[in-house]
Length: 128
Image (cartoon, rainbow, N blue to C red; front, side):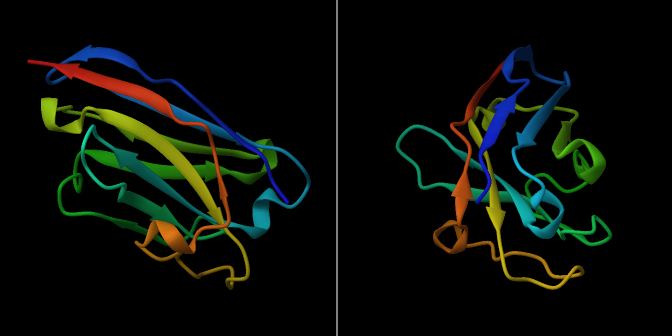
């Protein structure tokens, strides 16, 4: 089991940057594939980016490709999401999620239903 706590959200102007962090508890953080998801008001939770447990494999949704970077430091039990060139459409609550049972190169699903553990979320608001 792992507990996840996100931080780093806030209010930023369009074109600005934010770096989200997600700290996991326990010694098994490095065994989980991870993902960042977001949910805007009235919309379904959507995948933003995914990373394998080793950190060597990543995937991004088209809407954030080239602007966002997912990374992790297993020695610090921490997942990151660097967000650059932010747009008002990026406004949402951002969640990190953990998926167990995958190989070190495996990426979790884009489907949020398939993740095992979730953080409480952090609000990102981008003003125009």
